Length: 296
Image (cartoon, rainbow, N blue to C red; front, side, top):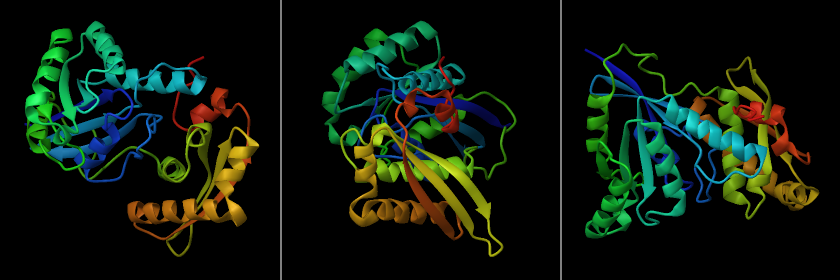
C-alpha cells in the first residue's frame, strides 16, 4: 500500500517555511534569506518517507498586500493551502502569536481544512515557555497534531515526517520516486540569483527587483549557458546592484553560479544584465514570468 498527498506549509513571513522545505527534501529548492517575504511563489518539494510520497508545497508568507505583486503572492499562498490534503501552520516560536499569525489562523478556521501546528525554531525557546503558546493557538483553532521542531538543526523532524507519511491518503505516487521538484531549471536559476540579491543588498533593494531567465541553452560540452535579466524599479537600485566597477553584480553572479552548478550537477555559464523598469511589480507579464498568476 502506498500513500501520497499534498502538504502545504503556510504561515506569516519569516516563519521558516523555506528552510523547513529544504531540510525535509535535503535539497536547495526554495531560496532562503534572513529577510521576510523572500519566497514569492509556490515551490513543490517531493520526498519519499516510509512508503509515502510527500508533496510539500512551500508558500509565500501571508501579509497585508499593497502592490499587485503582493496580492499575487498572498493569493498563491492560499491557493497552495486550498489545494492541499493537509496544511502545516508554521509559527516562529520566538515571535509567538503575532497579529500576522492571527490573520492566518482566522483564515484557516474559516476554510475547514485539516491543519497541524508546527512550532518552528523551538530550539531557541525553553519547552516550558512553548506550552502557553500552544494553548493560546489551540484555543483559536483545533489542530489535529502539534509538533515542536527546528528546521535549522533538524530537531523533531523525524517524528513529524513519520506522522505525515501515515496521514496522507492512500494513493499511487504522482511523481517518479527520484524527482525532487517540478520547478523548471530556468526558474530555479532566476531564484538563485534573486537569493544572492537578498543576501548581498539591503533595505528595499531586494523587494524592488525581480529576475527573469531570458535564455537557457545546452552546450555541446554538457555545460549550460544562462542569461538572466534583473529588473529594478529605480536607477539608484541599479547602481547599487551593479556596484563600483561592476563588483557586486559579478559577486552575485559568481555565488549564484556556484549554487546552480551544485544543483544541476554540471558546469554553468551565467550572464547577468540589470535593467531599470519602473512599475514592474504591477505588470501581469512580469508576475507570470516568475510563476505567479495576475490577481487582476
